[in-house]
Image (cartoon, rainbow, N blue to C red):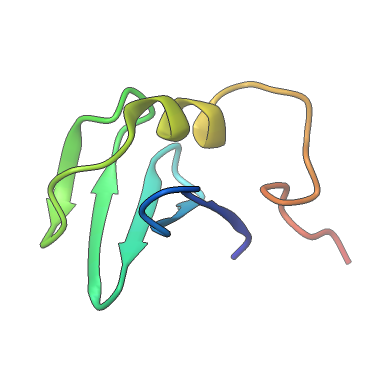
Length: 69
C-alpha cells in the first residue's frame, strides 16, 4: 500500500481499499473512517483532516493512488 506520513507524528495513513484509512504508528495500528472516527485496532487516535484527505474524493496522487499494472 501507498500512503502519507503525518509530518509531526510520523504515523502512516493508507487507504484500506474499503473506504477507510489504516493508520500505523510504530507497532500500533488503527482503522478509521474518512472523518477520523475510530473503527477498530489498538491505535484509537488519528488526524481526522489527514484521514479525510487520504480517503476523500480528490484527484489521484502518486502517493495514495492504487498501482495499476
